[in-house]
Image (cartoon, rainbow, N blue to C red):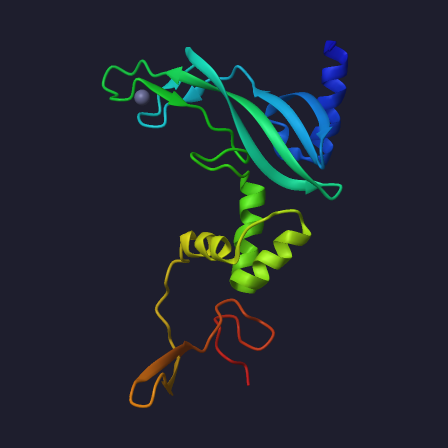
Length: 201
Ligand SMILES: [Zn+2]
C-alpha cells in the first residue's frame, strides 16, 4: 500500500474517529459483519509508567485488539500494534513497560475508553437488564451481569457534606426496617434551587 493511500486512509478515519488521530492507521476493511482497522503507534517518546522517565528504546511490539464504538451500525475492532519499551531509569525497578495511547488504550482493557464510557452509562441509566438491551442495539453484546459488573467498578463521585437531609423509614421484612437518608439539595441546580443549591421557593 502506497504512502499516499495510507495518508488518505488516516485522514478519513481521523474524521470518523478522532480518537484514532494519535496512531497511524494502515488498513480498514470489513470482515463478516464487523469493520476492522489495523493501526500502529507512532515512534514517539513515552514516559515509564513507574518512574516517568521518557524512553524510545523498543523492546518489542505486540498487537492488541480493541473493541470500539460501532461505525455505520457495524461493530468496530481495532488491531493496534503497540510497543514494549525499556526503562533505563537507574533507580526504577521496572525493566520494560507497555505504552498506552491517550483516549484509545487503558491497561488490561479490551475496549476503547469511548466504548467503555458507553457501557458504563448504560449501566448507570438502565442498570443490568435494560443496559444490556440498549447495548445490544448498538452492537455491544454483554450480559446484564456484566453491565452491573462494570457499573460497580466505576469510581464513586467525591462525597460532599450534605446540608439538608430527608429522613424516611422503610420495611424490608415484617420486623426488619431500614432508614433512608436523602440528600435534598442538588449543588449547582438553578432551575428549582438558588446558586448554592438552596431551594428558591
Ligand atoms: Zn521506569
